[in-house]
Length: 201
Image 1 (tube, rainbow, N blue to C red):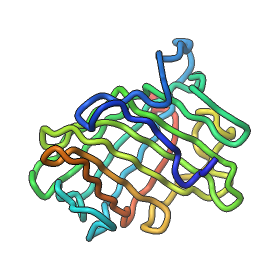
Image 2 (cartoon, rainbow, N blue to C red):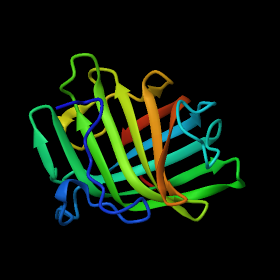
Image 3 (cartoon, helix red, strand yellow):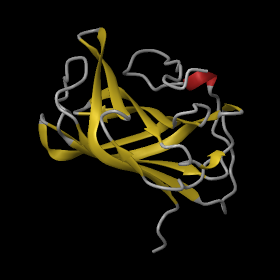
Image 4 (cartoon, helix red, strand yellow):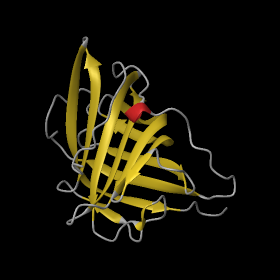
């Protein structure tokens, strides 16, 4: 398995909801199992690493959270990795096209936790979201220090927060532009990724 790029299958164009790796239904989890919040926040680097930054996200801040129940059964897994599907993503991104924070949401988020690489552990998320009333697909890849994953590829809080840098974290967004597929890759200039239980109110 290539941990630098998890191969995903998208059905239809970026304007359609995704169905990853033949996923069929949401796994049933106990109501008593706690959720884990995977929260990534920071600022995109500028300029973009590749592609035409159509939505002007370079240099702008973001804050997104993926919500996963700790009892969720992986859709697929092997000794060093697992993937989970139909997770919820919510948060905000900023764009040079809109001065206000733009809410983003997805109920079709796909997440990979991997620890098979000898140099780093991996967190990867792919989801269809709406930005400026247009549906795009985002793919975030973060290389994390060894020992970050608290219980291997199980959904569990991280042992330590992860510092996001241009050399360890990228986000690629893809969309149909005038009927043709296009993608833009952005590094993350600075930020933090955490995985924790919700704070009691």
